[in-house]
Image (tube, rainbow, N blue to C red; front, side):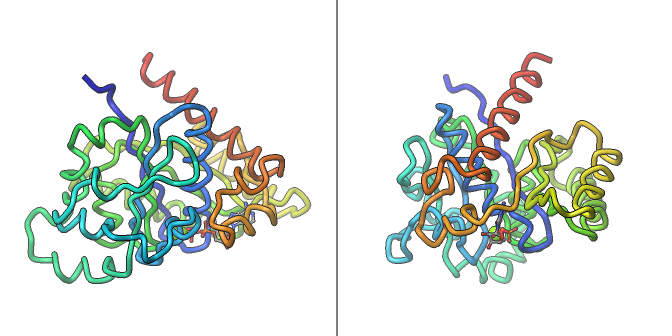
Length: 263
Ligand code: ADP
Ligand code: MG
């Protein structure tokens, strides 16, 4: 009845690498192309929720309630200013999740169960924004996902962080999700004037080949300003280089999906 959706976890154990910015803007771009998209904010910081203009007082139900089995995706997802884009917002309650649930045998599969519903399957893409650590929240995201999308900041320690993350993905495959795929690596905050950034791009491409998206997300001040207006960069300034890059990334993601489905 429903076409199979694609659940993509956006993860990197480092903070400040562009996970949330990628979640918001890739989701917006996919929605603009006509996909029906849901973001699940799994970071207690709630930056994706705030960046999409969802006030704290409007977060009646949250991703915490979903993980606890207290509300479902249908009643938790709230529409955003972007047509075809909804979000399951987060609250600070998430900080307690790990401790409260640590004894439960299904503790890593709470999100997976919540997404195994017709309401969730009606979205063509579900993007899960993870906290900057490898904890039970990230584990739930990886257990529920078809694939992991890794934003990587073009800086000196990028490759080191990446090999750690790839080890984590292997560990997840051995334990909770044998089919977990790498959706792709997206290089963020690229500054063409910086020789080191150029070197990082070429190293990452050598190391990971076609897993790395062709699109480079440039460092762009408009992208960093947008969340303070509660808007995705694509609504705040469609013409800026960052917005254009995220639109290009979305079409790359969709092309790869078509190829994958055809294979
Ligand atoms: P994470 O979710 O991985 O912690 P964020 O997406 O919140 O990372 O990004 C960290 C900071 O960098 C934020 O202040 C964000 O606005 C800024 N930022 C992210 N991507 C860009 C970009 N392409 N250009 C400029 N600033 C960016
Ligand atoms: Mg974040």
